[in-house]
Amino acid sequence: MPPPTRPLSLYEQDGPGWAAEIREAVVVLVAVALCGVPLGLLWLRLAPKVPLIAEGSGNNWVVYLKDTEGEQAIGVDGTFTLLALAFGVVCATAVFLVRRRGGVPLVVALCVGGLLGSLLAWRLGVWLGPEQDVIVHAKAVGKGATFPAPLKLDAKGALLAWPLAALLVHLGMTALFGPRDPEMYVGGAHGDSAYGDAAPGDGAHGHGESSAP
Picture 1: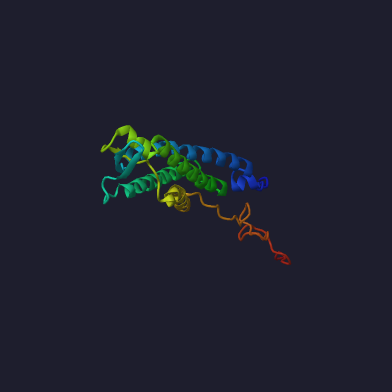
Picture 2: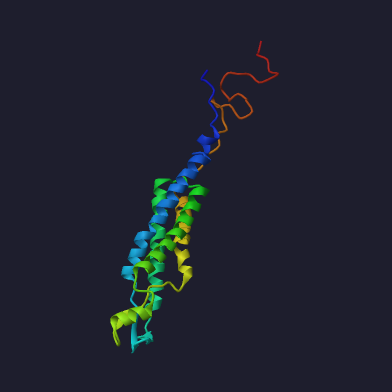
């Protein structure tokens, strides 16, 4: 008679315990948030420049848009949004490929890391971008010269593009390609039912039956 099978522990059934999941989530959060650095640099490089022009002398300076009908300001927000969406898709795909089982801590870390990465990219792009004080910049370039406006993000909702994209992509990939729960085992080791009845044809007799004389 084969030895009885050992029931699986909760750890074996559900994957790593909460402590391991929290550690993985912290690593994912930090790694995703640091991806905000390349996002900020790409935004700074790819975003269209908003041209300004200055007039004045001494302490009296006026700065205004060179192209009042231009759409460069909208392009700045659009560039950040598209880049953030792409980063969300890439990060979600990478996290899924590394750990297919997923889990609540991992998804939360992916979303929070994406939001922190967006904030980091935004502030880094502004910091490395053109001078924030347009009057100082105008005095530096001189009267009538064209110079770029400070890099800024008017549509603050763009900061949510990364975490939302990461959330939707990760949930979709988990639903389509994630591991499936194993089917419940009903039969016994030798074909017995869940109630211990003997399988037909094994030579055993039911209760209350007697052999023929």
